[in-house]
Length: 177
Image 1 (cartoon, rainbow, N blue to C red):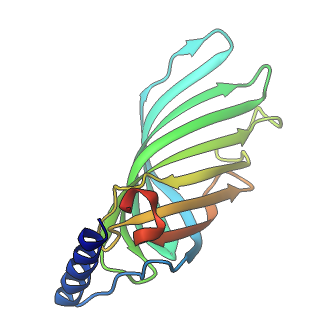
Image 2: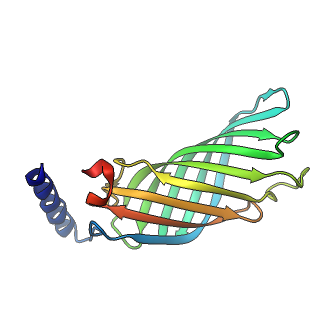
């Protein structure tokens, strides 16, 4: 197993050198901070179930800062304006772009987001939100091969948000062992 890992490490290093880029070293943590904002959204379905409003939609999000790129994701939203006065959002998607100057790559992720609707009825895009962003280990490719980690994001208005993530590569990720 160790010999296979050593060969894989050498192959990744040689490929990275051949492409003229660099890959983050295993064991190094990268703190990523920046801003994300939705640039397009298409609603697929929006039924209701009792007092719950259910929405399924596709969203394109632009990332700036340590992450430079785009996500395309599918959001499943359950909104409760009667009892909890919150929206609960689950997101699955793909990021494609770079991390702190890496070569271009991609990875899949999942997000859990909670939106405070206690002050509603609200004008569009004026609802505070916060959530967790997690990379699906084993999905990284290109310059983001072997990535794992994630972090949080927050927005006081729901109109774009700041993010703070921590990423690792290689042997520090369970899926790469």
